[in-house]
Image 1 (tube, rainbow, N blue to C red):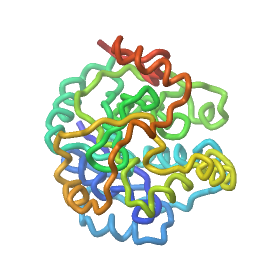
Image 2: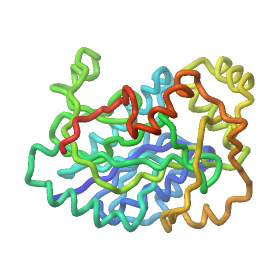
Image 3: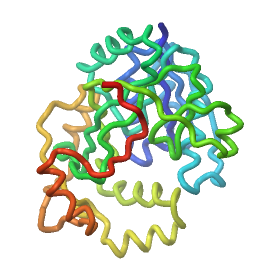
Length: 299
């Protein structure tokens, strides 16, 4: 049984994503790791090379900005990595996601225990979505609670939509032409959280990253005007809660080096009307109305 890790990244330092920690966090249980590195101007590629691991294979790419709309470029870069995978299982880690070292044995055991059970096509993992600082996580209906990060190879799996998840397709041609919606994977859940650091970065990079990401879905000027109108900053969030669990050891230097302060102020919370009405009900009942699940969970 062979496990292949893969990710994509471009200008990782410029946008303050922990891409090196992401790679290193799953490297111990991977037999190989495919790093798809878009042409960067901040030494991202050199930093990955300097990890000095025989497991890591770097694939150089140049991003086609004609694929910006709808985040298609993210799916394309993911698929480039997936096409280089040679293992029986693929483990996708995004550049702002890190796995805790204590969870690696649990993940490895789950894969081994289900390797011969072909009904299990993949695994979903829960998420901690950090916001503002390393001591807050977002906890509302607007965030995804689980997503596929591990799956079998040889099933025709491709990145779905903007690379958030995966589905299997009958052919690459159907996937590329958009004539097939794809089938959801049958998965089991592993209780090993993805530490998602998308909402944590120094003040000078927080707005920059929002503008960059927004430009993949809307016109750049439109994105800038929208963020200005919202006075976009850390207070532009619905709800967060304190996080007191230990971070992955790889992230501890960044946690210790945080030189800005964010304190959540509920009075400044920004809610969409629908969410403000539904959130208290969902909190009480313990489930999410109309939750998007890009998978079929095996109980």
